[in-house]
Length: 108
Length: 230
Image (cartoon, each protein chain N blue to C red):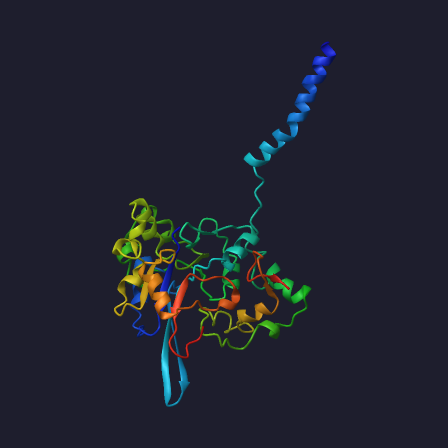
């Protein structure tokens, strides 16, 4: 009888384990660490590397000598010393898949 | 639901920049990181040319690309409130500048240093409010992103006073830029209310959003002047 009771108690404890684990995961979520500003450097960071190194895109694919889009408020931001600003309309050449929570849509 | 939008009527705007000045004083933005900018350009062919005045602030997009970028890097500093207003939490912003990189309007401004509105002339007006007493959107920090908040401090006050229905009508609950326009080229209010002034004016003028091709769903509408860019 004692063995039976012990088995039942053990079984109930085992059954409760996943629930307990779920409770822990909801009450103490493991926060995703924010990327450091250094790793996200607009030039050396992953964002730029994805286009220049992985996709092997040349500078002039995105950067123009001058920005003709007057409805862009920071058009002169990198024109002085860099390769020129990026016309965001160019991004739409790839980033247009709808219903994706990315910049303008996932890449096609 | 209340969804706040702004209408800017280019056929009325005369480029006086009262809206820009009002924003500067109300929100004491750093001159190098403006929240409201007047863009001017010419359309037509000589001699039939004319000037278009296109004041721009944050578009408070329904699907903000800045928020998507911020979430993707894990900072989660950008949020949309119950009115659809896009806000930056300066305490969470890591200054990576990715929101600025992806905004199709070039709105987010990475504020390199907190400067006085009138450099060298000391603090003026609202700049004298003690830091701790300021609205969170006015607790400026260096190396974080700033932008137009639709005067969130006024909207929060409307909520606190239980006067959400007076947003866009009462001075205390309406963004500063919309209050000062001398030619009523700016209207602010609830687009979900078909009887609101902004709803009627958007319908009457056939106003549109700028750069709709980006799919971000801006909450600022423009009644375009003839030949104006969109």
